[in-house]
Amino acid sequence: MKTGGANSLEHHFMPFSANKHFKSEPRLVSEAKGVYFKNNRGEQVIDAVSGLFCTPAGHGRQEIADAVHKQLLTLDYVPPFQFGHDLSFELARRVGELMPGDLDYVFFANSGSEAVDSAMKMALQYHRCNGQPQRTRFVSRERAYHGVNFGGLSLAGMVRNRESFANTLSGVSHIRHTWQEETRFARGEPDKGAELADDLQRHVELYGADTIAACFVEPIAGSTGILVPPKGYLKRLREICDRHGILLVFDEVICGFGRTGKAFGANAFGVTPDLLTMAKAITNGNIPMGAVGVSEKVYKTIVANGPAKGIEFFHGYTYSAHPVACAAGLATLDIFKNEKLFEKADALAPYFLDKVYGLRDIPIVSDIRGYGLLAGIDLQAADKPGVRGYEVLQDLFNAGMLSRVTVDTLILAPAFVCSEQQIDEIIDKTRRVLSRHAQRAGIKLAS
Ligand SMILES: Cc1ncc(COP(=O)(O)O)c(C=O)c1O
Image (cartoon, rainbow, N blue to C red):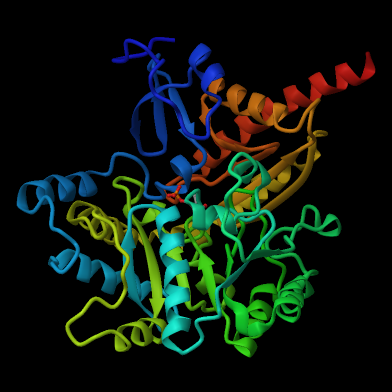
């Protein structure tokens, strides 16, 4: 394949990528518009995962490009410590309107990982302000993904992401994940399993409630393969947190901004956390930005405890509330509102899920989970875990579809602007490639 403008693929050390193999067989794209990329041969590649859950409004949006261009020439940078600009306040207000309950405040970062680490620090400081500095433990979940900085990595429960890096934070424990053999192929929230939340109570009893600062969960665990919470599970977590003064944090880096058919997973599942992390779709993935939604309770406690003219929260990033990212964020929220994209996602979800669950008959498909415009399709592992998944990713790209694979789970998360025909295209390509793999596996087994 042509490498376009690149003379060599050697020097970029790619993240979460098979560097050696990629450089021998690259998957390069050079353009994107709507729900299609173009590969370096100029062929169309349908985007089945909104980039990386980033671009629900589709690629190449003129409104965002115009806002970014204008902002660069009007006010390209403002130091975010002790100085400000209108856009960040407006964006915070607008995001606050979308979040449920008293989540009315927003702290800006530049990625999901930074948002998670910021939320961890906020939780610690909140308890310190309340005279409970001993609340330093965090509880998260097996099979969780909370980004890659050392805070989020410590919370995360995906083994491969941790095993090379010995020094994760101490004082983090993991409740069990919510995948259950008996609810395989459940559509939406499984009927069984709310009691899995009681694992948090076990941790409370083991470590003492007054040692735990916060419990972090993704409403739908995304990167681990789309684990939809059992009915009542998140409510039960909320109740246990309330009973013991533990902050509940939803990591909505994937679920946020309409993916579930509602503004946030918190809205979809009717449970309001104390802190809510977000990133990706906040700018339609066009400019890096992450953020923490903060409840009035947490914001006011931290701010009230600070000195009259001094800094209350010793944390922030050079690019927090970057004016260009804020401009992209505001333009994105305008698109979401003007085009009613969350409602569109909600309306498209049943069609999408019908089609995805229709793949159940392919012999190598061992489970399907889905909610809103988010689905995970488990494939039986081939010789070693991850081998089939990687081959499927490659074969789908060669067939003209960009997808995401985690070990042997194929993840689909189409843009909200997809038509039913484009959903059909995604499903047809998936069926063709998976059937070929099933056939090959059958031939292998028979020989
Ligand atoms: C739930 C969750 N949290 C955090 C992150 C990390 O976000 P980033 O890659 O922007 O640091 C991700 C990324 O996919 C995520 O899914």
